[in-house]
Length: 357
Image 1 (cartoon, rainbow, N blue to C red):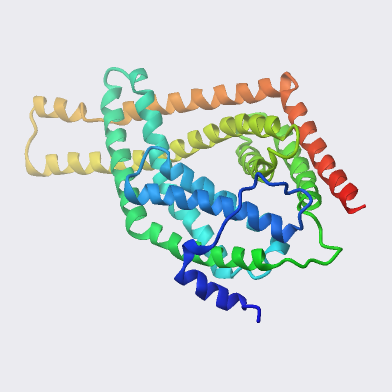
Image 2 (image 1 turned 90 degrees about the vertical axis):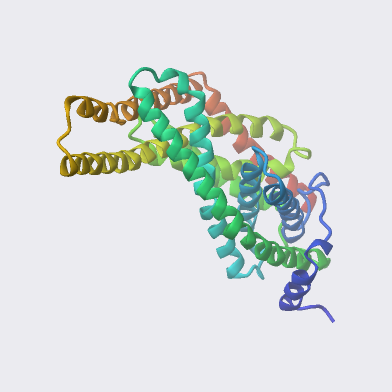
């Protein structure tokens, strides 16, 4: 008797490592959506688990990044092919969203601290006091984020993995499909057509730093396209080039997003530093009559100059990234990329129709 989804979930909870996964190198385009999507998701879940083990044992510089990428890819596959996973528990979707949010602080602190350290030499004179204050705050923020990650967040992945393995095992057990079941190539091509239209719209409306919503939307859209295409690189000619160029575009948009995040943190830290400085001055005046030497020393504790110097660097970074994005458009690289994605979408659907015929 076939097992129910609930029974599969119970079995997977007991033996999460027992489910065999398959490499997406095998031909996928002609496979029914439930089967192909399960193969892709299995590999993505394996990547997330491998990074999870690195995080829990001896974290390296890329462990958190790889963990987040694996989870994002898995979540993207589940979202792109909902018809492939009708038994996907709502709780599993909740776990994936929650894990993405809960790892944001650690990732942002890691990235911003790295950027500040790499640009430290550009801050000189009195501004270095504010820079050191920022670096210390970032280090504390990173340490706390990783503490929460180890204590709370990573435990959530165990439950997520158990449920995901059960869903994937259920798909792997299915071997009889109706003749009218779509292939993943046909459905993926249809999704790409919609996404490339959205990406085209967002990219064409990026002109200044004020277009931050368009920048953010283009980044998310490009990421979804890349996640759809990546499993097909070995099978569909031209996909490797498109994925590589999408990654370059993603790097520019991602760097801009990181600059925005740092700007928001600067606003937050400015309020905190101003509060600390005001309290320090108040206590000084309440408890003693400060002499000129003491007043001079206190004035030198002002970190605002350093904040302003970092803010100027952030503004220059954003301007430079916008120039690079504009150059992609001017040279025609952006239009060529959009055209090539649309062509891949058409080829996928054409391939599916030939196989079906």
